[in-house]
Amino acid sequence: MNASSAAGNVFIKTGNTMFIRPLQNGPVAAEGTKETTLFRKPSGGARSMPAPTPWPTGLEKMPLPMLLQTLGDWQKSATLRIYSNPYLGKICLRRGKVCFASITNLLAPLSPYKAFHRILSWKNGTLKLDWGDPTFQNDEIYEDISVLLRENASRRDELSTSQSQLPPNTHLKVASLPGNIDDLTSPEVDVLQMVMAGKTVQEILDTCAFPDLETYRLLLRLYNQRFLSRIEPA
Image (cartoon, rainbow, N blue to C red; front, side, top):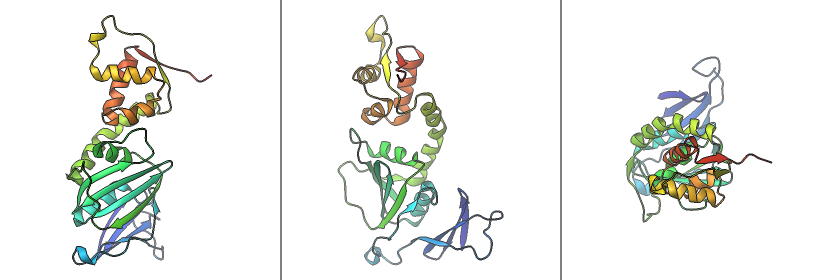
């Protein structure tokens, strides 16, 4: 039996089953605390996969990075569906590697990498796990979960700081332009055009081809150079 803890819970792995138990009175739950089965690892080959697990559970009960790392360690195929109103995210794993990620209800489709990192930034939502090989996609990736999780962790603080400086619902306006427009990079021009079209910060993040952190860096550079300013609510 193996145990680890995160987010106020202790995760206990016994054979093919993982449990979650709330922490009480220190790092190990008191005797008699009820364990909740989150999912059962399929035994045997791929052909013996069980039916889809009948939950969702909340992200606050099962930290997504820990769940992904566990699935990677098991080298199994599965699809995670994460609903965070109004968005539905999906992360697909094939033989323990991330092969695809997507988010619905956006202005434009996101690349699998951008969708993966966006989903990991969600704080609230419900999570459902289905075992089995996911459907093949045209733009699949095949990345080690540990590498993606380390990359996400290294960017998390800067992204959080950027969101506090320019919250996603912020409306911006073009306050000025450089004397020579050629001094702007092509991505900066694209962002300025989105601002002039009336898009919020969130809509710019959804539309821009760059990952969220790189898009925030563009926005903040233009904002700090006073090319952009906030539109204050009336």
